[in-house]
Each structure stands twice: as structure tokens, then as C-alpha cells.
Length: 195
Image 1 (tube, rainbow, N blue to C red):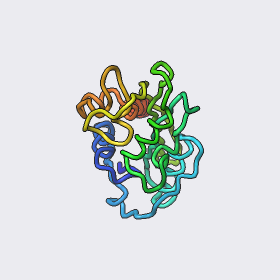
Image 2: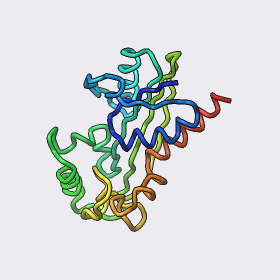
Image 3: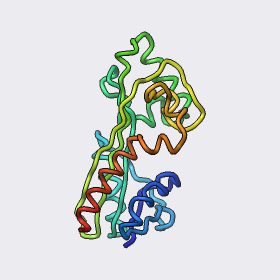
């Protein structure tokens, strides 16, 4: 059965294929499905945005769809940047500018109060239009300066133990990340429904 992933991100496609293909799903990207429409993420939560994306694609194609929304929540900033993680430093900001803004906002905040988590919410709509949503998280601390050259987004400032996400290998990160957590939970649900 085909399932459209509401993304053209090759990393996400590979990760999700690894989980779904053994269960009989053939994962295809938006471009492979012939979809070029940009979907406005107007939700106020990760769950709302994931559902908005999944439902928009389902309404176009009437087949199984999987979508995710993810970001960073920092406790000292009352959960910001949250769903606005990508736009936190402005629409055209790059990863370096986003990290710089975050570090500036946390200037003077002591180590023990710099707790944060990456969040990933996956929404799956099956052929019969029923939706399943799961949330994955990864807890950490925001460092005081960027470290490492791997990863993207806030990875250089998100400390997992004594290393930043950008200092982990992709294999290490993929085993502990918020997306890995969400995908594990999602796979358990789908396996249960298939049995």
C-alpha cells in the first residue's frame, strides 16, 4: 500500500521507509506523488500542524498519508520557540542565526535552568481516513555556545549528555532523537493494527 510522506526531505523519507516498508507500506515523497502545494502550518501545537499537513494531503489524494511537525521547547523560555522553531529568528534566518538568537535569549540563565527538549509529532491518516497521532521527545540542556559540525537546526546547541546533537554521529542521533522516539511509538501502533 502506498503512503505519502508530507515532505521531500530525503533523511525523513529514509527513516520512515525503514519502519513502514517491512509492514507493507511503500513510502513516497510529495514530489513523487506530484504534489507541489505549500501547506500553511497554522496550528498552535505540533499535533495541530502535523494533522493539518496530513489532512491537506489526504484531501488531495485520498490515500494513506504520514506527516510530522517538530521543534525545540526550552523551559526557561516557557516552551519557546516551540512550533515557531524554524521562524524563531525570522522567516529568512538560517540555522546559525536561530542558534544565535536562542543563546542570546538564554544569556545569564544558569546551566540547571537551561533544560529543553526536542519534540516530534507524527500524524498518520490511513486509507479509511482514520488518524493516529504520536509524540516523541528527547530531553537535553541548551549549551552556552555551538559545538559540532553534524546535524542541522538547533543541534549544535542542544546538549545530550556531554555532547551536542551536532557532535553525535547520525547513527547515534537517530537512535535517541525525538523523531526516533516518535517512529518507535508509531511502529508499535501500526504493528498492533496489522496483527
